[in-house]
Each structure stands twice: as structure tokens, then as C-alpha cells.
Length: 139
Image (cartoon, rainbow, N blue to C red):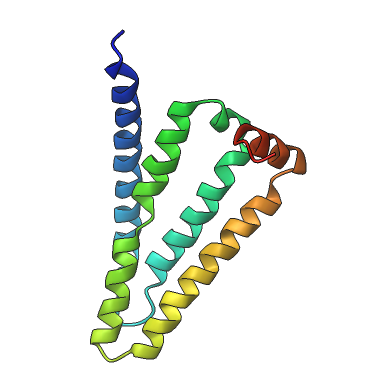
């Protein structure tokens, strides 16, 4: 096996996961088309994605498989969540004169995502948190 093989496997894991995540986001966007009000679909996608990404370290099976980490983290969840749509939604609201709603969306998304990450962390068992900290060199 060449030295490039692990890098190619990593790239394939991220690419395959990213494709699945992006398609999932696209399908959800199609179920709830963007209107002129608060962009609830993008908001929900980013909050759920933040929660799931923060929950990954609590799963030992994920931590023990570098390929799975790449597939699920930067792959699926990286493709699923979307900063570009978040920014475009805010720009669209400002352009339509809904500056207050745009500000609420920008700040609300940030706060909700931080709360989702905190909730995911608190839902993991203290033993899992300690194991993750040890594995990451934080202890």
C-alpha cells in the first residue's frame, strides 16, 4: 500500500459523506421552500447538524474509527449544515427590508447552535466525556 492510500481513503470518506449530507439538506429544503419570513428550514438544519456533530465524540464506535469520523463529521454533517445558506438567508432578509428579522435570525441561529452543542455534551455520560478528553489530550 502506498503512502497516498490513507489520504485517498480519507478523501473518499469525506466526499461520500458530504454528498449524502448535501443531498439530505437539498431534500429537506425541497420539503419546506423558502418564503419571505424567517428561514426555519436552514435554521433547523444548522441546529440539528450542530447537535449531531457535537454528539459524535460521545459515541465510542465513532471515536475508534477515523474513517467513520471523517465520513460523519466533515462529510455528512459538513455537507448537511450550511453557512452559505445561512448568510444568503440573512442577506435576502436585509435586502427585503427585514433588518430586524435578519438580525434575529443571525443571532438566534448562533445561540440555538451553541445551546444544541451544550445539550449534546451534557447528554453524553461523564465517563464518555472523560474518555474523549483523554483521547484528545485534554486531561
